[in-house]
Length: 522
Image 1 (spheres, rainbow, N blue to C red):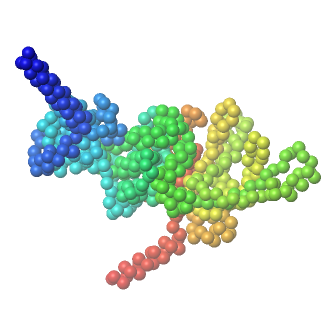
Image 2 (image 1 turned 90 degrees about the vertical axis):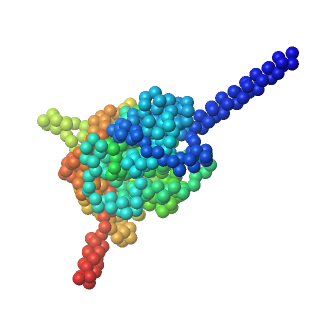
Image 3 (image 1 turned 120 degrees about the horizontal axis):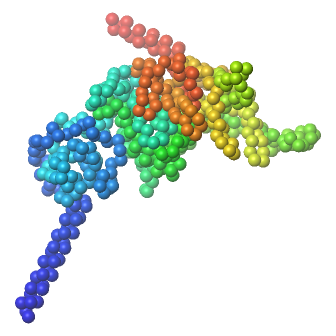
């Protein structure tokens, strides 16, 4: 009896031991990153074996643009990329998905997507080899201040793995399904120099603190990552997929903007700039964030209420004398200016062909000259408004309102806007007092977003000026082509980005100053 009890106790102890061992293994495999184990980490620092499998790495299939998820467990924790087939797997410990993949497929070289360390599985040792630095740079491109300062001076082309030549910054974006309306905005913003320079250097926004539980800062990080990939001179391919950026957009817009449904670029631009500003802890002041510092201008809005039409002249006059119907002035900041197109003609011409109406950009800008009044209607009241620009921003965004919505459908205005590509003078619409406050009011076009096709089924493309070679490029999703500036003015422009040019007198002074010192050196 005693021997029976003794055997039962031994079985219980063995069962407990096995249960503890199995759960210890499960915990180890769930956490599975032996970097947390100091003994293993110290051992790896001392021993770096030469890996015989480096020639199995296939750079053609490596794509770090997509979300860093394990392809089996869909976990974001401790994800490794197989450098042979390009797939993502979790962990590298025994019985993990990466370990199983290495044994089953004989794929041995893996990269930790967070720590940027290379490992050989199933032997589980770290690989240290300078020949892998190009892979590390593609995953996480970095830019020095010197490199950033030379981006607008260089027109040097880079070569992808397949031999394709591309210009950094002039890179196609993948259209996952219907996200071309996002692509054109991201490509236009990537060529706005102050915004680009700010996000290329991660140190500029790395120390920004957000409240606990607020993860909207992820939008800033994703935009910075996309910006660095677009300007990466050592990409393996000549295009970039904005998958992670769009995932953050869908999440933080509450699914208002999706990459499976066509949207409006101006709605996305307005939401995106304001979201970036808030995520960077921006306030109402102009210098509180790089977004406001670059795009924010100010205007004075003068509003007066219109008396009802059914009243007689005496009643209308008495109402106009009241404070309610007097003109009220308010100051309003803006990130872009909305230009209203004149209505298109209702009838065809004598040859029975549709007339394509044309209008000058300067006539659209008269809306902001403090003289032109525009009527705004609500469901019960009507207002007349005048707009006076009081401060022009360094970068000016114009939105040409082409779509009008009514109860039944959306209608597109096909009017062609005639605009110069260089030296657009906004001083003509400023009052003399405001114009005296601006040293320069001349702007050059740097980006032009175009809508083609029907209102709900059309596509978007963008024209971008490359500062390094002063050439224009047309980008529509993955397609990038040269284009003459004369062709840009013939398109149905929708959104335009202008840069304030340097005053000619300032340029003349700089030239004299540089010539003077070069003469003294001689």
